[in-house]
Length: 97
Image 1: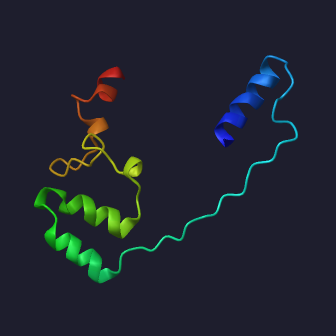
Image 2: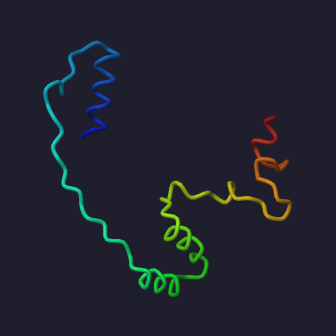
Image 3: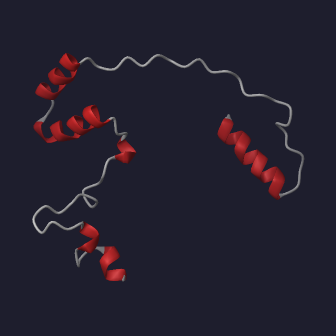
């Protein structure tokens, strides 16, 4: 409900109507306990995962990165010429400049 509240608040200010949530407070939400994998469980998963997914899970387990935070293949460092893809002549950002 918080995103809806924010949208309505912005709209009420922008279009000058009375904010419908003026005296309504958000309900308290009970936070669930997160129980991460033990190191033994992590190594069992890594041992049994498909080989092409192994690096993905290694990064996820040991960095704590979320899926949207992971770099795409276009953002990875090109290890042969030691340059970033944005400096590569065929990348869109290089051709735009």
